[in-house]
Image (cartoon, rainbow, N blue to C red; front, side, top):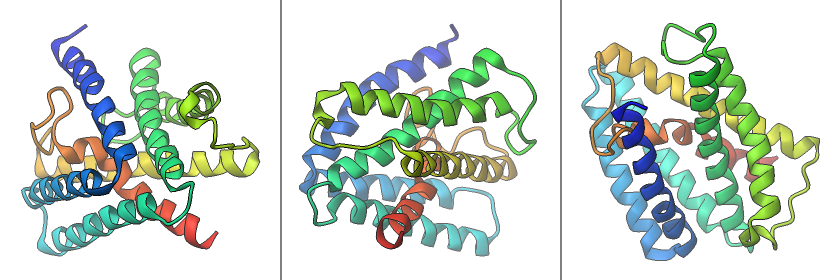
Length: 215
């Protein structure tokens, strides 16, 4: 096990409990957390070596994404917290599934945009997002009051958001490739910058908000 992988695992073990605490706590904790992440994300994006039109659109889209996250978390109903955690878990399990399947199965590359991405990793992202989300909702007592029926509609919803997350990952990877950088920053040991961690979520939040509001 290489040093970067060890750093990645240790960072995740430290970050995830803090992340879930902030999300569940809500209120000013969550708002402050969103603002800090937004500022760092915008700084990392502005440091990208890309043309001004794309950069300005990216600034707008990142702000829109964080606003979508705020709306999703603070929608005035009894299930807003559970819905938000549902979305976050899809992104996390997609990322983990892609990493695990990609490392173990390897196989053909998915695209030249991101040489480390494989078809196996993409399948792993879909598999983990559905299976491990089902297991989490079924066996973690916190979700006992959140009765999700894993019917075709919900499975399609999970797979769709998993797909958006993976596309978001590829898009940020594309701009990193253009900028000739490996990571958007070095804030998180083993992971890189904030954008490296939330690349999929940036695209998932607006998509989920549209689905939740209009579909």
